[in-house]
Length: 215
Image 1 (tube, rainbow, N blue to C red):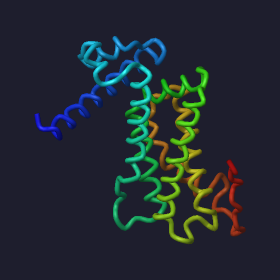
Image 2: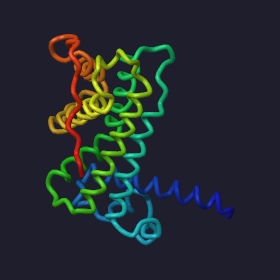
Image 3: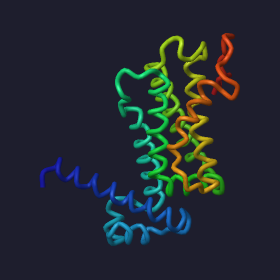
Image 4: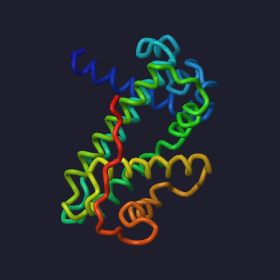
C-alpha cells in the first residue's frame, strides 16, 4: 500500500477509535470504561486497538487533543462578509457552542472527571498549555476582527479573556443543570452581556488591563 494512503488509513482508524471512546465515556463514565469497552464500541478487537494506542490513558489524551483541535478550528469558520464586530463575535460564539452541543457527552464527562480526580503535574501542565493556546487564539481573533472603537478602550487580551470566561461558565452551568436546551441558543445573550453588560453601554472611561502572571 502507498505510504501516504496507509498513513491516511491509520489516521482515519485512530479518529474512529477516539469517536468510539467518546461514546463509551459518555455512556459509562470515564473511570468505568475499559479498553475492551472502547474496542467493542469501535468494532475492533482489543489487540487491534492496542496497535493504535498503548492504553486507555493515551486514548483519553488523544480524545482531549482531538476536541481541542476541533475547538481551535472554529476560529477558521468564516463569518458572513460585510458584518459588524458584534455579528462576527456572535457567529464565533454560536459556532463554538454548537460544537459543545455536539460534543456534550464527552465534554461533560471530562468536566466531572477534572473536578473529582487528582490532577498530576503532567495533566496540569497540559491543561495550562491548552488554555494558553486557546487564549492566544482568541486574542488573535479579537485583534483581527475588532475595529478601534468596538472594544471601547478595553485591551484586546482582557476582552479575549472575558469572552473565554463567558463561554466556559455558560457551558459549566449548562452541563451541571443537564439542560435539554441547545447551548448555542444562548449565543446572542452572551454577546449582549459581553458588549453591554447588565446596565447598558459602558462609560467612556478607559478600562485597565487585568493583572498578568509573572510565571
